[in-house]
Length: 273
Length: 200
Image (cartoon, rainbow over all chains, first blue to last red; front, side, top):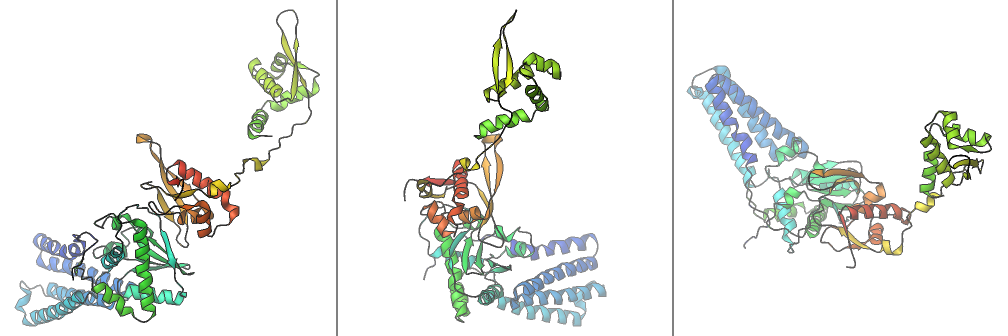
């Protein structure tokens, strides 16, 4: 089956840029100061990376986030050990080398597992593909206004349960208030800015809002709209995005949350996209 | 009394010498502009303008006096009480069936920015660009809650337009709010944020 993508190809490397930037920083600090200082610097950077993933776990309860968090903790410990021993070649000590490589292999396999199974993948791109799937008309008509798209007959407890489900599977990041729950779908690469609060107010992003009275409304950010290959009919796109979440809500409520994940996996979006 | 007439009264009464002139008018049988000016140490033109405006408003009457040289006017107070009475209902915009049945939607590429309320389904403000070229500046309109709800339910550009009445019904807005809704529609039409269509 050939899949026709509605979104432009993803060329965002933000996600890879942050861990990769540790390498030149490590190299430069080692060159300017010493390899011990370089190791300490690397340990600090890796620990910050680990803290970030642990924060994502706390925010979403997505257990796959514990893998990079634990790996970062392990690497931080190893780098500190190496720096504290002040040896010219850390792998001269067989015990240290053994501990290091066994840990790297173990966490490497775990990382590959969570990546391949998409357990740590932010599903924003899948959401936008699904929303665009049913929209054939191209008419543009973008507006920054939200659109009311319908009503769901569920109580606040069911809504909270669905919001937790969305967070746990990285479908969307929920924001709670006394009157509503707002779900913000996040594409891979955009998660750092959104979670660290560097991307501005979430109300300016794309969101689907569930009022406590069941009203559902949708807002699509211009940046996300421009990510579509064609100027899709905007009102239809908003309705479709709202419908995607309403369908997900229904399936989750029937205890078929796994079908939601299957539907997104079927799109076969690239692992880092 | 209409607003323009009331504004003339208010403008006269706001002068710091108004009370002094009225005191002279009440106590003198008739008085000329030059007598008022010399008595109150005002410029003759100031006194003359004030008395002329009073005459236009019908508070004083004037009679022409011809003496040796050229003629001049003497002013006589006609009424000892000034009442400013404005019926505010006269500026109320009663919604006509025609204005409520106009088909509207957001204009494509209007360039307006809408701010959404955090806790409810309504728009709190809309920022629009006014002027042209280097004179262009952003103007932010704060909306009342019914106006915000109305704008929230306004059809998107390229979407099927709806009548003002239909949008109000969809947004659950009471008919009593129709004048303020129509005021907003009129303003946003002026700034080309909303377009009015003759029919679907």
